[in-house]
Length: 136
Ligand code: ADP
Ligand code: MG
Image (cartoon, rainbow, N blue to C red):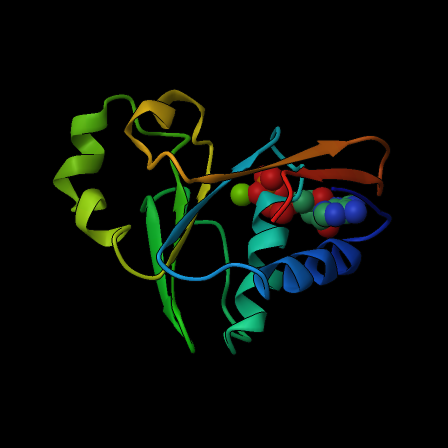
């Protein structure tokens, strides 16, 4: 599926709708450059599970966990150099439950479950984004 959005709110709304289709445990990879809207997407996604506030980028601490009607694990792997760093924080156990959204997953795809979902966000204009998902 492809979606075109024209504001962060529209990207959040697309994510909210897609969240309805995803059951835990599941890994969702969010690819796209800096400023594409991966964190905005996560914010809308988390809202579907009743997580209304405080979704921000976990760039410096790698992971945030939110407790809504499902547990949402939100990762930013941009600063991770080696899979061992991820294993050390308990990544393998963490992704076994809840829904895990992963920003910058690209270097670690081989460690992720085969049934992961990949969602690609591309900046096509100042406020325009193209969101591509596989069929959910
Ligand atoms: P990422 O996590 O991919 O680095 P963020 O979600 O943190 O990106 O930031 C996206 C930035 O782009 C925000 O400043 C947001 O306001 C802006 N933006 C503009 N248009 C859109 C859109 N259609 N969807 C998402 N973000 C948008
Ligand atoms: Mg981000």
